Length: 168
Image 1 (cartoon, helix red, strand yellow):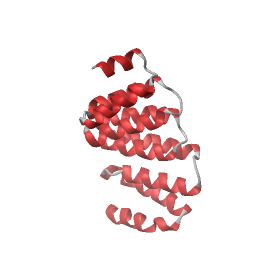
Image 2 (tube, helix red, strand yellow):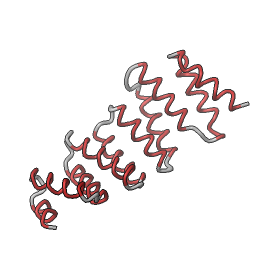
Image 3 (tube, one colour):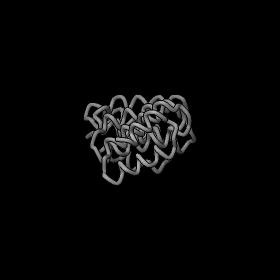
């Protein structure tokens, strides 16, 4: 309690923050740690906030099984680093796990439309969006994405063949 009060009074105090984080970790108080990291990162809009948001998301997802809160942390991180494709992939998978597949597909689609990254990145994003289109009524969209990926990289052929077989 004293560490929490101290950090609330001096939010930028690194030693207090580290001691409180160690306290939470040693007692496996994952919710408290995730909330502290997310709150801290929310207040700090700089690049240093990204690792904290990712760590908070990891805790929400893996330790607490709260994918929606993990997605919210990653959404904030993605808003601060819109060209970080690794973060986008992490966010899309998290959104999907939270039952927000449509939002995941939209975000991946927006990155594809922007032409973000290299040719290999585009192939990866097209494959990811196809993977996120898992419902039977979305199979056509998934095949279109895989055909576009195949046009860029022939190694996508097995995935495309699998989806075409599913359509039969």
